[in-house]
Amino acid sequence: MTGFGIRVGLAALAAGLVIGQGAASAADAAKGKILFTQKYGCYQCHGNEGQGSSATGPKLAPNPMPYEALANFVRTSAREMPPYREAVLPNDDLADIYAYLQSIKPAADYKAIPLLNDNWSLDRRPGDFGPAAFAGPFLLLRPLGAKLRARDVSRRLAMIYTHGVGSKQNSRGE
Image (cartoon, rainbow, N blue to C red; front, side, top):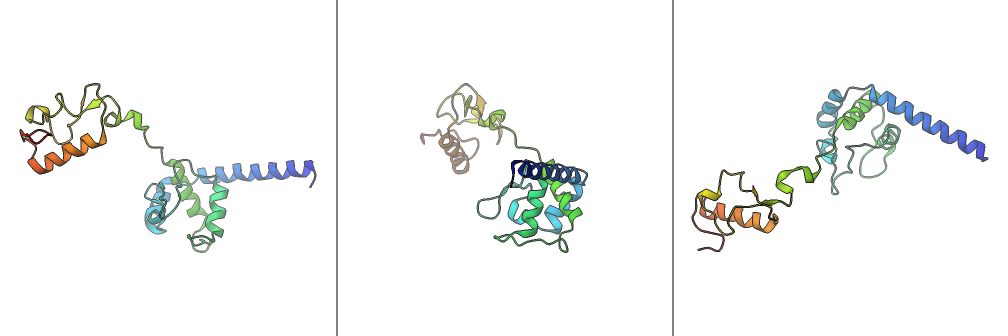
């Protein structure tokens, strides 16, 4: 194949992808969610929001693969997922499912979640777990500039479970 033929082929492929994306974006995301989570059962392997799982099925969203690639895979799959021919999954339904996958927003950055920041501590005094240090079941963490460690959270939750919320017993068992 000549250089010109390759360029023409790539241009045709790119045009097909753009046209396919346009057709998919004209679809109905709300209907696609119903099709994804109820009618076709896609969620069973790919999760309710297309997040996927290493055990069941790959991630589809956010930022799904191009529509033409997804449609081709869905129609011709020879892997764990059975192929869904057009008689089973019409093109309009597939376009709606793709619109739903496109509508899924990425999860928040973990740095924007206060409980996961490095500047949170469990209470004002290490070892004190009295009522003054506890302001409710989900307010165990207070911003104090200390680092939050998973084992500290585990210890605190185990102590709540064992001794109750208002226990005067500290983390050392005193």
